Length: 142
Image (tube, rainbow, N blue to C red; front, top):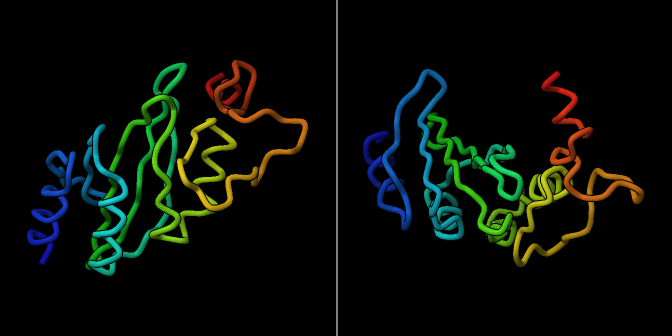
C-alpha cells in the first residue's frame, strides 16, 4: 500500500518525488497545491500530525506538513510566496492552531483562515518573533 500512496502523493499538483529516510517519507515541493494535498489526505484517511515552520530568507518561510498514512510518516515541505500560503484549516480543522502559531512566530499569512487572531504571542509582541534578530530564533543559534 505504501507504493500506492507514494504514487498518489507524487501525482498531486506541484508535487515532486518522495524520498524515504529513517523517519519516514520526505518531499520538498515549493509549488505543492496545499489545498488539494489536504483534500486528498483527508480522503485517504491520513492523520494530520502537525506543521513546522522555518525561516528560509528574510521574507519567506518553509512550512512542513506532517501526516501519518497507513502507519507511515509523510512530510511535505513547501515554501511561502510573499510569506503567505492558503489555509488548510477549513479542510483539516486540526490545522487551525498550528497555522496560527506559525503565523505568530514567522509572520506567515494563511489565506482564508477562519480564526486569524493571534494565538501565543502577547498583545505587545509583533508577529514574526522568530524573524527578529534578537528573537527566539536568533537567540537559539548562539
